[in-house]
Length: 252
Image (cartoon, rainbow, N blue to C red; front, top):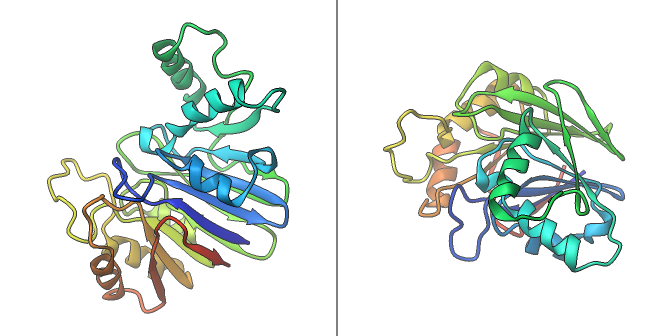
């Protein structure tokens, strides 16, 4: 299994970065986790959109899905006869995107020629070629779903946006790699109220409890010091700690 970081920023991309987006691949199976601002460009350096098996969206904050709009326009008008791409959304996601479409365009149906929209259910696996993606509900300001991705040999746990919780520990249990948001790390603003995100220390404590081998911090505030964030995590976790950035690729 391979993980490629397409974007690793929260809310606003930093210079040369994008918001949340990750490509997970096993053999010729390629699945995109989240599709935030600016992620489609880096994606196409790695895989043709025609070879993308699916996109799975963790939750309905725009920094995790808004490039679906660009993808819709590109597939509708830029590629004659392009097959629609399967997009798996959290419960309520189809209604949410239809409401967005009404605000954007008078074209109806808006999504259908480019994207086939589905909704997943917590705990019910999605079998996407050689990859299985299992959504686990975590705790955030809105409904949010971490993802456990397996290929029969390896497991990747992606936190989505969340606070530290038992659900996240269960999601990550025994995984090779935990890809964990760390919005509050590295000197990020501390005026979040209520707190709905992890610090680097929180992510590291989850990694310890879950027994993972590698921790990859992501979803940084655009002003964050990522070197500092890694140091904060290493105060709690003795395994491999890395900071995500666009272009980072890892083999599990």
